[in-house]
Length: 554
Image (cartoon, rainbow, N blue to C red; front, top):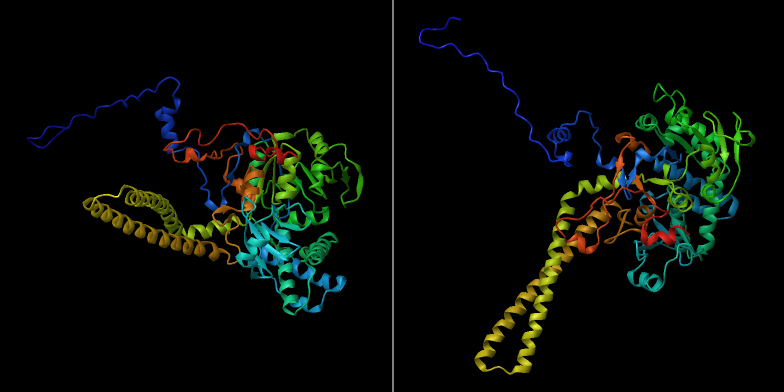
């Protein structure tokens, strides 16, 4: 090779061997550089999960041990436009109360107020109030009509007695179906009492419930929905892929709904037919379809499981469960026997905390996933107010330190006062002690002023976050500084919870859902916790939280 004069030809490249990998210790394969590299740059693409679409975990659940996944239909697989659906139920219930129950025609002019009602409220049929409780059954916010009940009256009515929601006096608003009931109750009281009329609160609520149950039971409400499915139903593009993902992971799927076969066919065809080429009909996704299940009786009674013909006609008691066939009614033992799968190998996904989640948890070892549609709006609101939440967290920490320092200064001032009273110090000592006492008083007053201002700022921030989301009730899962009663029941009875059934599309069908282990107070202050994600076992008994075990298994 020729080179310019005075220059040396470049040396040929030297082939180098890659540096040897650092060995890892026996029994420490988790330190293998190849594993660490794979974790940093995984070869299999992961789909990013938006925070509001995450599946949240109360109890560890291994999907590789789940063989059968079941779904409710209404508000689970079929997502409704809430405002339109609730307004329809509200208006049809009002019409029935006027036409069949003799209520005055002027109540027909009432307008549905969707901002006034959320899940987790309690109707008091004795006093005509609606209130929200925390996890300790402590009554927080309360309204009579839409007028706030004064705090003194709340204390007088509810602080000296135990609230038992099983009593006929109370009605628990725990489903989206029930929201129009609570709104009707408040608005009718507001209207009639505003006219000076006496209202029998117990009868009023029972009439509202009877009227709304009737429009559901006689098919009139569902007939209206079927006339305009596009108005009332949301097409979720991720639903088909989510069900396909579960089936591809070797899971069998079933549908278990209280709706009858004709409404089920119309709704499911609308939301799933033709979404994926592999499933031309919605029924191709499911290994069993049971309509008219009458939950929660399905979990506790022994109703026969009937096979239906192609037009819904009963063909007698079922002796097997076949794909592409309809079934109606049934009971838990018969279903598990015919499917050949039961216990904690079944995951059931539903939206009703009593009919779907609590009853299945009490009656079986089925694992549960609760659909809480409201999560998406609540998380979006909280993310918009991250600055306020961060300031709240900082002030809470500061407030603790100030409170501790106030206690220290009060104790020090007591000691100085006793020295003055008991020891009768000499004049030169008295001046020094007096200076120290005055300095301690000034510091104590400054600390108290800081505490008052911190408390006021915390209250203002909490009002901004809570009442900005809902001016009546605040956040769904909180009441004051505690988890709400609705949040507590979600935590106790649902192994998983999420905003929609289609969120399974973001996860492997072999996913290990791990829950952060609940820390005891002495652990929270430790820099590092032992077993932050608990152990591997699933729920050993129904309602597996130890403090709830006896109640949940009754």
